[in-house]
Amino acid sequence: MDDLTTRWRSEFPILDTSVYMISNSLGAMPRAVGDSLADYARTWATRGARAWEERWWEMALQVGDKVGAIIGAPPGTIAMHPNVTTAEMVVLSSVLPRGRRRKIVCPAMDFPSMIYLYRAHEAQGFDLSLVPAESDFSIRTDRFLDAIDDDTLVVALSHVLFRSSYVMDVAPIVERAHRHGAIVVLDTFQSAGIIPLDVTSLGVEFATGGCLKWLCGGPGNGFLYTRPDRLKTVRPRFSGWMARKNPFAFDIDDDTLREDAMRMMNGTPTVPTFYAALPGLDIIKEVGVDRIREKSKRMTAHLLELVDRHGYRTVTSRDPERVAGTVAIDLPHAHEVAKTLNARDFVVDFRPGVGVRVSPHFYNTFEEIDRLVAEVARIVEASGA
Ligand SMILES: Cc1ncc(COP(=O)(O)O)c(C=O)c1O
Image (cartoon, rainbow, N blue to C red; front, side, top):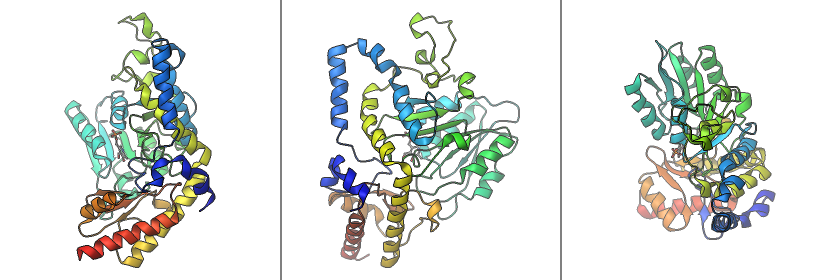
């Protein structure tokens, strides 16, 4: 076992009973989440409504700052939302098509929930321009750049494409978007916690993501980063009392908004999920994304070696810089193979077109990877496929 595994493995109970390689979907729960949720229950039981003033009202900022420390966002710039779809809706509600400038440019390989949302906005005058994918489910940067022009209002893209784990080349895209007067919304759901990311140096106006995958923070913890200069002027229409400077004035004519990330929030937040997110965020920060990336690269390279040795197909890029945390193994009946693996406590997922997705995190071992691929081979052999 390497240093990372030795130090951290016992903090994740599910690793005792399964080969857990699905951190692209739901990261393993840190043991400390139990105590943190008990703290929530104790606070509610003993402090009741006083907890709002004592901690809960501003707790989204506290969690947001912990996310920020991992993705390069300054304190006070990240709001929390139940999920990324909601966070993207807040962003979209802050812009309006005007004149020719009405295009949303997005990779066709973005997460479908985003595309459903953008497409629904066509009824309100937006035009959705989807940049098609290559046969390996990557998106060519030059094609993406070509789609951005003076008609572009919003460039919305995933940093890492969910299906293929392909890492997009974000910097030239941001540069071109800004040159043409468009804003950028970067979905970091598949990159935060597994590859180094600095939203400040990327210069994006907005970044979304969630804690439940590589950040090991559980569901209900979507986040929204807003660039500090924008926090002074942005006015989402999907807003609410939490965004107001004086929410307890209950004045329907009060339109004075806060100038920190609370400006991007709306109604009562999902407080219990914040408690669940804290231990994972602390662990990822302590381990450090650079170290996570270094080990992750070795693990995905090892997986690709085994895939080649068995003669399986994969859409995963052979350029280590373009692969985030997941290797896809394309097999006949891949969905059935994934189900059998799960039944045998090898926890992975399946996506149409790419097959079985294997997503080791810093807490996994190389020996687990060997066992998992050996199990795949056994299942494939038994099926006669
Ligand atoms: C890149 C990306 N964006 C968004 C989502 C999900 O968004 P939401 O939090 O709205 O469910 C996923 C989920 O897998 C994802 O991989």
